[in-house]
Image (cartoon, rainbow, N blue to C red; front, top):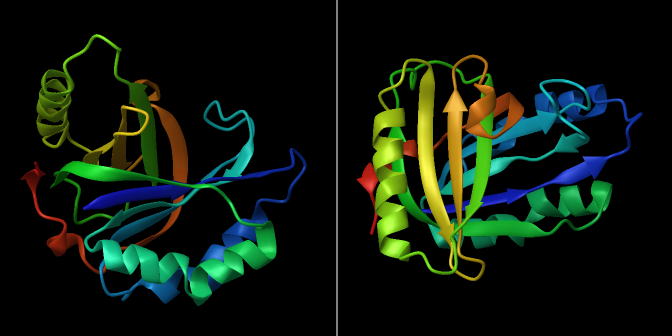
Length: 194
């Protein structure tokens, strides 16, 4: 599994209905994309749920790295580049994935929290503790899906969770989910992936 996200920060006075319409008319195009585990079409609106900016920031869990490459080099991402410019694309190695009790519901929100490992920390110990936290989180009422991934270049962990309803403030940056494409969630595996 690989996690991926790009964020397009938009002007403070940007009409976010444009993004909503874009997702409404194009979101279904990845509903059957081979190799994609899931894509949460996320937005933040300035002043809503503590968001400092307007932002379109979809989050992906890829079951196959080749599929991620096909997407980034294909027509779908060309449309993003044409309309907004080429964003920096963050990606992480998957460490953990598990559906939660609300996996059958359509998620309304996701959270993303990035944590940098301390210089003197043992990565295996920190990751084991983070996985234990995600194991517990995966049993929490309202959790649709939770995942943990690592950027070994920066030694950062990204905590990603989809929520059936609103997300708690303590979970990280909060995004509204406009659409979920989930053609390959069964291919993502469950539990620890290392």
